[in-house]
Length: 618
Image (cartoon, rainbow, N blue to C red; front, top):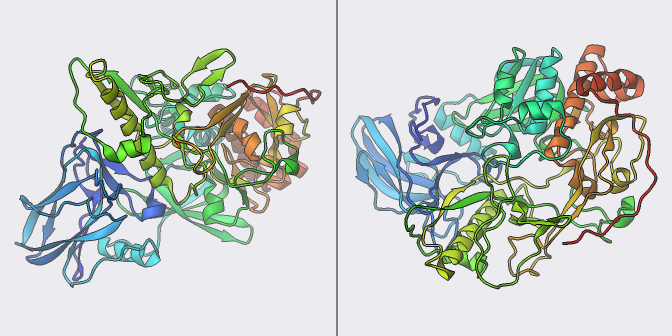
C-alpha cells in the first residue's frame, strides 16, 4: 500500500545519513510496525506476506558524492532458520548481503562500501520470503564507526541528531484533559469529556482507534453494552469503528494517532505533562493538562511515572478469592493473535516451514478464527486425532475460542512483546502447514486470508487505587457508597500451563468462564483513580482490581463505562478545582448525578446475598 509522505527531509551530516525505514515514501507491501519501540528502540517495516514476498518498499534521497559504509539494522527472528530475509537495492544496484539471516537479534549489519554520485539515489527493500522480514533503518556511514545498537538514551540522541530533530519536545499546548490510549475505553473517555466542554487530547500509538476492537484485531466488545459503546463501536463496511469520525466531529477533541508516550513529567504527586513521539517523523510533542486518564491497558503512567501498580495473581488468602492460587505469582493473561483461513478457487502452495512446525509440532486444529471484525471464535479446519485442549463452552454450547491461541502468560509483557507475537505467528504457520500436509487433497486450496500482525493484548500491570475490587466484590455484589457505574459479564480466567508442562504451549490449558448470577455489579470511583498520583485516573483492564476481578472488568464494554465515569470526574474536577480524591470526599453526589445523566442509569446498587459458585464445565 502506498502511503503519502509525512516525513521530514532526510538530514545529511558529516557523520553520515540515517534513513529510518518508517521514512520511506512508499511502503509497498511492507507494514509500519510500531508495537515494540520500547523493546528494540524504533518503529520498523515488516514484510508480512503470509509466505508470499511482498512488493518493494521504495524511497529516494539526495546524497553528497563519496564513499559510504552501508549498515542495515534488522533481525533474524528465528535463528538457525532465517525465515524473514530481504535485500537492499541502492541506486538500482542490489547489494549482495541478505539481511535477516545472521542468527542475531536486532543489530546493525555491515553491507560493504558503496561509491555514490551527488544527487538523488533510489533505495528499495526487496523481500525474499514473505515471512516477516524486518528492517529498522539504513545508515550511510562516512566516519568508519559502527552505529550504536543498544536501546538507551545515547542511541536515541544519536538518531535525533542524524535526523535533525530538536533535543526537547515541541510544545503542543495546554489541555483540560489528556487521555492516553485510543482503545474503546479511551475513546469513550475522550468523546464524553469533549461533549462536556473539555479540551481533550487523545494520544494513540496505533494508526487507528479501537484497540482490541479495531480492525487490526477485531474482537467484539463484550461486557456492559451502554449507549456510548454502541455509538462508537459501530463499524463501517471496511470494519473500522466509528470512534474516529465521532471524535473528529468534536471541535474540542484532538486525536494524535501513531504517537507513543515515552516520558512523563511530575511535580510532586501531580503529573504536569506527557511527551509523545510521532512514529513516522520522530518528532516529539509535549502535552500539558490539568487531569490525565490512562486508558492504554498497559499502565503507562506506572511504567514511566510513579503511579503504584500491581502485577500477576494475588494469593487466595489476600482477598479471600475462590479462583486465586494458594501462593501469589506473576502469571497473567497472555497475548493472542487472530487469523482467518479460506478455500481458494484453485490449489494454493505453501512452503515448508520447519521453523514453525518445531513450535506447532503435530497440532492441526485451526479453530478459533476471526470471521470478520466484530465476530470472533469462528471454526476452522481440523485434522487428526491428537490430544486437544478443552474447547471453550458457554453452558452447553461448545465453540472454538479465539483466545485459546495465547502465549506469554509467564513472560514479562513489557520486555517480550515481539517474542510473544512471533511465537504465535510460528504456531499458526506451523498448524496451517500441518493441516495442508496431513490431508493434502482435502486442503489443497486452503490459504491464509489474513493474519494480524498486532496481538490482542492480554494482562499487564494494574493500578492501585484507594480501593482494590476483588472477586468477592463482584460475586457478592458489594454495595459501595461511591458506586458510580455497573459492569457486567462473567469471570473469564485464562489458565496457562506451567512452564514446560504442555505439549502445545501456545494454547491455553483451561478456561474458567463463570457467569456468576448473570447480574451486573458495582464499580466504586475509588478504584478509578490512583492511590498516589493526585491527578491520574484510569479506565479499562488496568483499573484497581485483583487479577481474578480483572478477568471480568477487562471486557471492553465495561471499559467504556469506566471511560464515561472518569471523563465525568475529570469535568467536575476541572470545574470545581479539585482532585479526584477530593471529588470523592466532598462532591460524590455531584459525580453520581453527572454519571447517571450521561449513562441514563442510577448505579446505587444494593448488595445481593452471597451465593454459591458453580464449577465451570470445560
